[in-house]
Amino acid sequence: MSRPSTDGPSHLPGEVPGYESHLVPAFRAHKSYVCPTCTQPIAQGTGHVVAWPEGLMEERRHWHRHCWRLAVRRGRVTGARDVR
Ligand SMILES: [Zn+2]
Image (tube, rainbow, N blue to C red; front, side):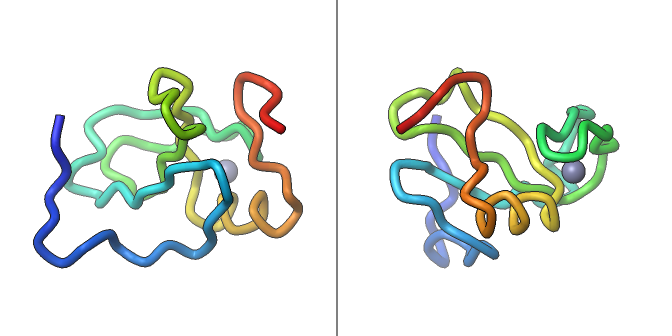
């Protein structure tokens, strides 16, 4: 899998050491997800953030953009597993 690298990575509202995070534009949001912060669905076609612990892409989770920012600020960006 490759990512478009024309303009470099888009700037995210927050970055977390040890995590890869990317914006998913609305047109690429083909599924709906449940946001781990607010437990509300992220509707199909909604731009959002996907993030995963480095090297563990299968652990990736999808966040609302504002929820991601909140989680980053709170240091609460843990998904399915405990990452230290
Ligand atoms: Zn949310």
